[in-house]
Image (cartoon, rainbow, N blue to C red; front, side, top):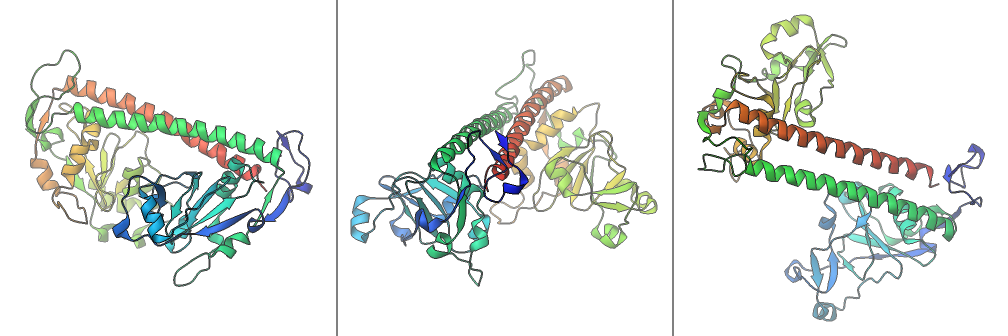
Length: 426
């Protein structure tokens, strides 16, 4: 690929394949394609499993702004098409669908469709004409932030002319194909890594279900060789340090923002540290305040768990963190290291059955709350001997490290794609 001189950046991208030197052409989307709006599809008529795919805005609720193939959850039968006089949208080349009404516009989510389809009246499609390379057009729309062109009012919206008036820059078809082919291969690699990552996470979920005893069982379904004894029934608090086993952060009044100082070696740890398993901090406190709240100091090998909003997320405190205290949204666990393996404890709390149990005080409630720690300490749990704990903890640590490695690879690929999107389009 060749880098382009700054003086010609306005009509060509910064990065190009060799052999292409012509300026890119500016066209309105309406000159090289057309928009189509959706239809009303009564809820009572929905739910079909065969026929013409019918897409709703809710079908795009899965996170991510990549322009991927649309999956339908509803279909309109031939009899419904005839009865309602619906004409399916039929893209000769390909189509991109997106929200045209409401807050969903600002998510900027778009999906691609290659077959005849219907969309609801909260959505719009743009159909490429034959002058587009399908994958180049898809990728251009991935880069295009449609929300900038919405009519903002009580209910933000697009109409067809808003989209068709958008000006885009594109090269002739052979260069479109080169760019489209490259991004298609890159997307395939990203999708492959995503599938591997998803599979690893599913495998871990399966192991967590099988390597801890189910309700009423005295041993797990899956064990390491050499262990045959029943797991021992104990109270949860037996896993913890007798004096500092569980502590919730200080009352909010003890750590109000007006007590924070601009510079200090003493920091405040927050819920985000447990949720995202990282230890960057935003706030500092004075040495005097730190000493006043010394009971809430975090040290290496403690565990912090989120206790409000996104609850139950747990992280093991690494070595080398800054001296600091944790706030009222966190719960700190300190284990009894003679009886409890730290990696085992981490995976035990992260297991689905424990996560459900930690919010089990409010079944059916729309708002989930953490079970009081006074109750948690008295829970009857089954625990293996420490040697078996260590085997289980080490196994899941290796699995977590593999998952983290695949996540880093995936994140790097997505960053590379983001860089290419910036440099290979005008």
